[in-house]
Length: 129
Image (cartoon, rainbow, N blue to C red; front, side, top):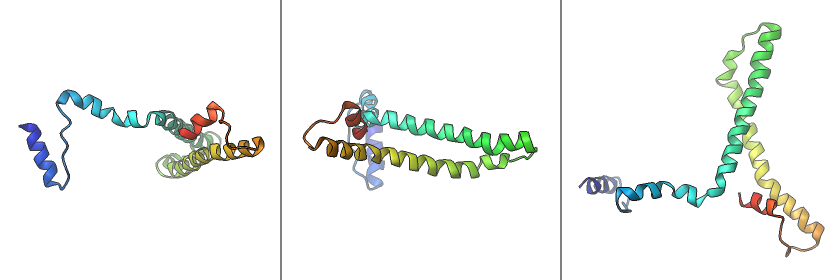
């Protein structure tokens, strides 16, 4: 009865509901994104670590260092100024890491003189990520 009510709400929203079975199947359905993109875990962790590292680096450089040596209070920078600097740097670094394996693969193919030899496993894995 509850499932039918939810399906009616979904239809009223203009979407097409899809009955995937009982509530026991929900656990498997929730795992679909991880099953479809299993290699996304490492890039996600890499981007998170890179953001945290850059944040602490900028806090030390722009907030703590001026406070210790010049007695300036720059804590207001932590809310807007530092994140506005960190996110573009992280995005550009990740973009470079996305295109770098293609460049390495092209150089490797030119060096080998053929495109029919397999890439090393680390390069193949990196390009798949």
